[in-house]
Image (cartoon, rainbow, N blue to C red):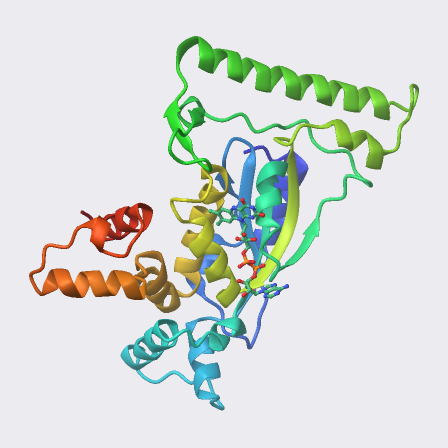
Length: 301
Ligand SMILES: Cc1cc2nc3c(=O)[nH]c(=O)nc-3n(C[C@H](O)[C@H](O)[C@H](O)COP(=O)(O)OP(=O)(O)OC[C@H]3O[C@@H](n4cnc5c(N)ncnc54)[C@H](O)[C@@H]3O)c2cc1C
């Protein structure tokens, strides 16, 4: 992760500050605030601000006058009930704001999540840093043979070396052209135009703010094993911040969403027949081969 000395000084100054407030705060998240958590080779994620805590979820669900906290066990039971039954609006009462530095191709996947507020670094106004994402050798994999949207075996030997060299060379070449096009003593091309030649592994940055309900939706999709590794590692870092921020809500989310599996009506029918002792096979199950494999995988078979 590369922070310039100026950026580090700014973050340290923000971290050294403390403000008095009547609002509830969460010590475990305060501890993480203004700390850049490294992600990928040059990226990071850091919490910039937040509002609410587990008690705010409970307070909203009960529409109570005070903090709404009864016993922790009652709050936990209520939060688990809300999560289990998709009663989602109480989770929208909590908000969090992140500063994220990420490769442009990851940002393209991330921006599809429309239920957030985003402000991106302006490459019309400023010059992008010379930083490209180069995968670590263990993440440089061939196209998967059976999953059109995934990776297969890790590249090795000459193939790996050649791909890494191409990624580095292309990044260097397009960035050198970017600088040349911008040169005030040369073409002096506008920043908004010169950027179009940069590679998609160039890093960008944004502030990204969302509420806890939509953050859970994002994390369920992007911390999942089907998500691309390069966005998944950001989601995994965010999970750590959520665990510190709203431990009861996080635990309910981990149980009812992250660690849960959904069975269709047909799958449930098959499972009922199996539990009754019937030997059900895929061809007469009413499930496609893929559904059958997915059901067995969810059952750890
Ligand atoms: C593994 C994986 C593979 C993917 N592959 C592809 C792909 O090949 N091509 C591709 O284009 N995308 C792909 N996506 C992106 C995916 O289709 C979604 O766009 C993305 O995950 C954002 O989800 P969302 O719309 O639910 O999130 P958000 O935009 O945050 O929306 C959250 C929820 O709000 C509601 N909502 C938001 N906006 C609207 C609206 N305008 N109208 C109605 N309801 C709305 C919906 O209920 C939605 O689920 C992929 C995502 C994943 C996780």
